[in-house]
Length: 357
Ligand SMILES: NC(=O)c1ccc[n+]([C@@H]2O[C@H](COP(=O)([O-])OP(=O)(O)OC[C@H]3O[C@@H](n4cnc5c(N)ncnc54)[C@H](O)[C@@H]3O)[C@@H](O)[C@H]2O)c1
Ligand SMILES: CC(C)[C@H](C(=O)O)[C@@H](O)C(=O)O
Ligand SMILES: [Mg+2]
Image 1 (cartoon, rainbow, N blue to C red):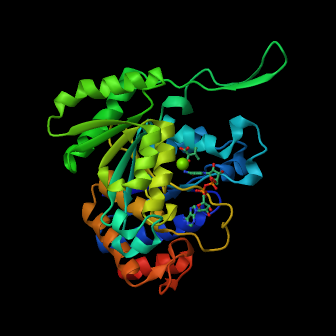
Image 2 (cartoon, rainbow, N blue to C red):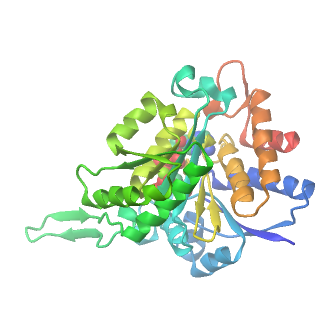
C-alpha cells in the first residue's frame, strides 16, 4: 500500500529545507516499509513565475488527491510589487481554504538541549510543551468585504472584516478540547472579547461546549495579556486556542521560547484528518540561498504528517528521536547556535538526522 505525498517546496529557503525533509522521509520509508511516494508541485512565487498565479487549480486538485501535503514556505521581495491577488501568500491561503484545513496545530516544544538558545531564561522554559490551536480558514484573513476604497473626500481607506460564524468557532473549539483531553486537560482560549463582538461570540461558543468536556479545564485570556504571559511564564499554558490572526502572531512569539522559529512545525487538518504540513516560518529571504537555514521545523512537520495523516506513528517517533539525537551531538544551525556547539549547514543538519535514523 503506497501513500502519496504532494511536495510543495515554494520559495526562498523552502526548497532547501524541503530537500532535507524529503531525504529523511525517504530513509524512514525504506526502513519502516512505508511505501511513500512523492509528487512535486509549485506554489507561491515559483508558481507565479511559471503560471502567472500563486497556485493553479490543477495543483490544488492534485494536492487534494494525495494522502498528505508537505510544504516549505512562500514569498519573497521579488513578488512584493505584484497586484495583491497574485501575491505568493495567496497560494498558501488558497490551499488552506480550498482543502478545508481549518485546524492548525502549532506545537512549541523546547528540546532540553536548546535551553540556552531560548529567548527566555532556562528555568522559565525548562520542559516547555505548548500546543497552539489556530483557526486557519476564517477570521479576518478571509472576511468579506475587504479591499482598499476611495472615500468621497478622495482619501483612500483600507478595510478588512473580522467574522466568525458559530459553526466555524465550534469546529476549531472541538479540535482544541479534544487535543486538551489527550494532553493535560488544560485549555486557554485567547480572544479580544473586551472589544470585538466576533470574539464575544467566540467566548460564548467555547463556554457552551465546555460542559461536554468535563475533563478539560477551560480558561479565557485577552490576546494582549496572552502575548505578555507567553514571554513571562509560558509554562502556565498547555493548549491554547485562538483565531487566525492572533494564532499567527502568538505562534511566532512562542517559537522563540523553543530557541528559534526554525524549530516550530505545524499541521493543518481538515475534518477528515487530511493534512498539510509546513514549518511555521516563512521563506526567510534574508538567508535564502546561503545553505544555513534550519531544516528541523520542516523535518518535524514531516514527522507530524506521518503521525496525523498517514498513521505511521512509529516512524514519526523515530524522526523526533533522531532530531533529539543530533541536538545531543551538539549540532546547531546558525539560528540555534550557542557557544561550545558545532555550527552546521542546512545540508549537514539534514544528513545528521538521516544518519541518526
Ligand atoms: N508559511 C509560509 O509560507 C510563510 C510564513 C511566514 C512568512 N511567509 C513569507 O515569507 C516572507 C518572509 O517573511 P518574514 O521575513 O516576515 O518571516 P520569515 O519567517 O521568513 O523570517 C523571519 C526571520 O526568521 C528567520 N528564519 C525563518 N526561518 C528560518 C529557518 N528555518 N532557519 C533559520 N532562520 C529562519 C529569517 O532568516 C528571518 O530573519 C514573506 O514573503 C512572508 O509573507 C511565509
Ligand atoms: C504567509 C502568511 C500568509 C502565513 C499566515 O499568516 O498564515 C504565515 O505567516 C504563517 O504563519 O503560516
Ligand atoms: Mg506566520
